Length: 543
Image (tube, rainbow, N blue to C red; front, side):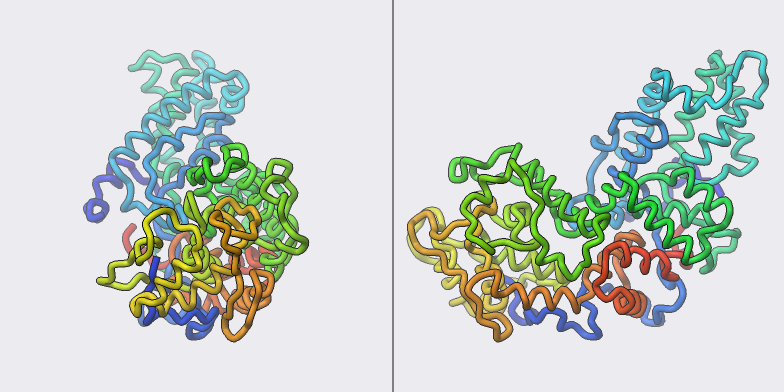
């Protein structure tokens, strides 16, 4: 089945395209009904979680996927998607790259990138040789051109080309020579450029093993693409193409074997950088800034080291085999560049994700910590507990709720003023104990014992009946919540299916989470990719 980009773009449905709410702020981790912690959409009330009631929507590649795909397809070092328009930093990129976000600017970007990429590939001897699997010499007919089209097209479209498609591109090859007066090699370059603007390259199109638009099994090449874009953010390799061609991906054993193989490949770095980086927000660290006048050790080199460290931390739970139950307690990867940040740590001050400099920095303001923001980030992102700001309430910044003007020094004292407001007290009573437990760590994650004005840090609190002196005393509560919660399962399900979970997914996610039991991330990936939701194609709603 083929698509034309101009027709897709012209489709009519395409053009249609502080203080927190106390009343909904229970603050009880994992307290939602039937274990679900995410922000579930209502979905179809008739959906009961049976086979493929919702599937993967039609969408275009993310910037990361586009750059990785052209790198592995062409061998290029160019990153044209870095200049494509972005759709915001919240949530998973793939979930906002639905076809309804396909703009004229992006379409033009695709055309420009295709021209540049094709020219780059044919100007480089090694890249050109990889495409020209035979010599399309003058007078040799179109036999060689057809072979090139079939082989390159298989990788570009992530499936074998149909006979009619091969005929059409072969005719274009001939037209380029006879009408445009191109040489055989130039004509091949012309065809490659055209293939790179096809919706079959740019979009993730799934039609299943037959032409019927009804729920059913995906074909082997579609499963291969789902796997490769989940774990590599790129196209399948030869082994995955071979498995697809041999219909080997129809079995759970083969899917699990492929997961192990693919996670062992260096390309799996894209998985933990994109999945964790988008879920937990660490991919925004390059654009975050701290006040270097107040924190002299802050610079771009330290920022880069923080990102490298947190990615190395994520790798321990993907390729390193650590169980998810240790995500909040695992020792940190060492970093020479971050030694100044760790220099004042007392023994036992840090463990796990929440005391990594990357998390502590991102959940702070440039000039001071923000306990409310830190707690909100923990609850919303790590535990999938939604926190909704109150409507029609003027939420003051810290320092504006009374007292002298000037920079906030003692954050705990300022938060007490917020809790004095009935509109704010409900959620601050929940959020502040969690956030203040981390108050020993400054806006770049360095340990401190006092505020800039000399006031001693007070990180004590009570949460769910547990008294603690600092984050180490609160950690057992958070570890237990992470062990019994379903947030990682919800997030990976959403990332793999490229959409937010709907009401019909509740049963599926509960079943996957029960089988996983907080094991390794590799185990969770296997449970997701062997589920019916991942292996079956859904009802076609607007393709």
